[in-house]
Amino acid sequence: MISIKKLSYSYRKKESLFKDLNFNQEAGNIIGLLGKNGAGKSTLLKIITGLLPSEKRSIEVNGHAPYKREPDFLSDIFFVNDNPFLPSLTIKLYVKVYGALYNNFDSEKMSQILQEFELQEHQNLKNISYGQQKKFIIAFALSTNCKILLLDEPTNGLDIPSKKIFRKILVEAIDDDQLVIISTHQVKDVETVIDKIVHIDKGTIVFEKDVYRITEKFKFKTVNNINSLTNVTYSEKCPVGYKVIVPNNNNEETELDIELLFNAISSNAEINL
Image (cartoon, rainbow, N blue to C red; front, side, top):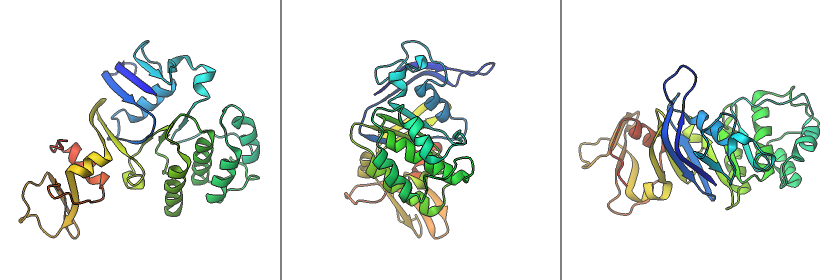
């Protein structure tokens, strides 16, 4: 699917963002790509799609060199950026024109997702709100059935009910032969759908683990105080006491708190798996 080996990249007149970056991902995963502002998340997605140049032989996506932007490559990858450009077309006409560019586009799936998001085919994309535009482009992306879907801040602009619908349709719409990478700061919006976490910091991948491995080895809990706890991996104050990450020594199953994990990794806590 995606094979990146020793990738280096820098913007003009700036120091290198990536230096010898390795990033290899296969189908069957919904990956949460996390990191602070400026860590390189959006840049990495743009390199994968060929929107930014990359060194020859450093990256291969679906058997193609992304920077060549060949038709066969473009027809099987879809990138939803935070500010999608949408022409002044009705939803119906946009789907007719652009859906033809994707060999596996599913018009029936598109109609179903539009209905879930309460969007109408007669609506002009330029006349609807930013949140509605985001819902539309998400619906279109999922309906392409591309092997690789890259979503940059997909829940920005969505209200709470729409975020819930987004999670539902994402899980329902994705097959095992697809790879989804979600880059986001809104980690609470996606923590129930992702199955792998990749944390990038200053152009370097500092953490990459499957969710099941994380919850197998650690417990995520809220406690009144931490004085009685031993081997606390990470803790932070909250209104009702403390949120903690502790070793899972008794095989207790807890829900992953991605925000807490993100803060732990950013604080250089020892999350050893």
